[in-house]
Image (cartoon, rainbow over all chains, first blue to last red; front, top):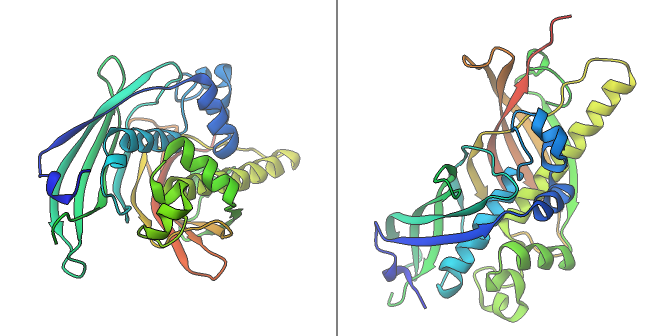
Length: 147
Length: 161
């Protein structure tokens, strides 16, 4: 089990790989983001995105799954209050595979809750060609092993 | 946004986006697929976890905002088309800032969303497009603010007649 003490500033954790399937892109979009460039190949080609692309919220959800599988589900995580920035840099196309890295930017122990650490993290996802697709910066709460 | 070109998008305008009901079934289904932390998928672990009971993934709360936003926008677009007026469909977003999960959202909660236009600007690189900025909020059935973020999205400018 990983605790706050294990997340030193500068430490990185690998994320993915996560294959972005056409079925999942369309299924997520039908449920939460039914814009034509997330649903229909032809309409997507004619759109600003240039091809069938995942909803940005789907890319957030896929990253969350990579975070859980990569380190969070073997960590004493206490949730997240939010994110300062999410950049959808390039469209995430159906058929691509995403992978990337989480980097601990900084950390401190909560003054009001000494059993809880506050990690500021950056998450980055790239496709197989090394193009950066998504960048997130935000906070994760983590239990302190020895408060 | 809401079927309107950038020129007719008014800073300060607020739109009610409707509501989304978080059920035990949809909370578990979303979390099992995308966010299988113990406090999102397991009642016993959740009872010992940071929220004291099962809570929805924060990304579920966010995706439900998008669902409500698109439903509202597409209804406005359909009305413009039915009235024979020009209609400008939604364009992609480059991202957002300061997303806050302020309180847990739990099965049985209903979140009502709204969006407020906070600004807009032209894009130097694309004379046919602009960027619209928004502040977005979600309130639970007790009126408590549970979710907010600062959005931005591309918007088409008026086509020449």
